[in-house]
Image (cartoon, rainbow, N blue to C red):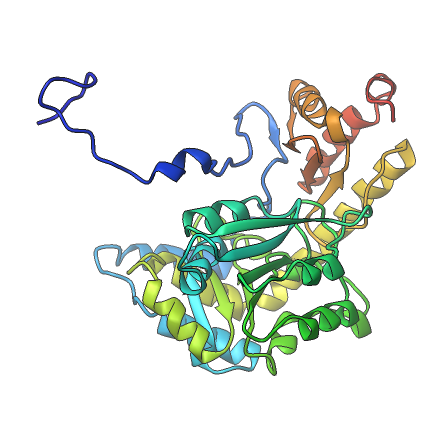
Length: 370
């Protein structure tokens, strides 16, 4: 019996977990067809031409289920990364893999999931959805992961640690030597997830370049997450991947939602990998534009941490929401984060210029005490 207009005599409301009321829903960046959108970390570059062709061809077989194990894509990634297929799992975006990693490590509400804060907004959500306890560890005053504090926060109840490197939303990154010290300080029983969604945008010096896949080769408790949503321009298709020890990958595949990585996404990801040299040229273009925006903001008087991502961070504190609304009124959507700051994604040059015109306006600088 349906109760479309509210409770009635004889109707029974299905019960759900009582703790769901305390779990916030993920909030994406705002959309407005009449405004420039710099509120979501998507690239303004479309899929590579070869990927677009693969998308069209795969769509013709949309009546068929995709390969649930994504064997061809896993093979391509294994070859690209210099690992075996047994080291690779595919997910519906890397965020789905985040939730699955909580599922395979946490089984009681007292189990703890650690992460820096502020960091990727999904971490506390997937921890709580997984019925675990989310533990936030503050960033340093420079808006970087405090790896010493993160290691010190490990307890007997800690099952999983997320390290977003480079970090979303601050754009900052920790280097190789610092990351190795952290990995070596955490007990082997704790699974460490290096979330490298912005890996392709990093430009750290080679000797300090923190390649998680390389660091994880001799560390079975390290899993690396990467995605095709950012640099590869496939955010709308949702495909990410995990690289780790075969035992962890096998566990991930047990909790994987069947057929959740669709046929079109798999085909596009394979084609994008094959055209990755063209992709690198595009990331160079975006990084130059990112740095141009940062330099302009610094010159205007803003505090802007060094970024190794496709966005910049303005730590505006209590003024963040007001700044976001003022920017929206000027025709540019950015992403305020509570009372911490504002993330501004790098768009096309004319879009960035529109934001800079707003942000460096003398009236705006005065209004926000820049």
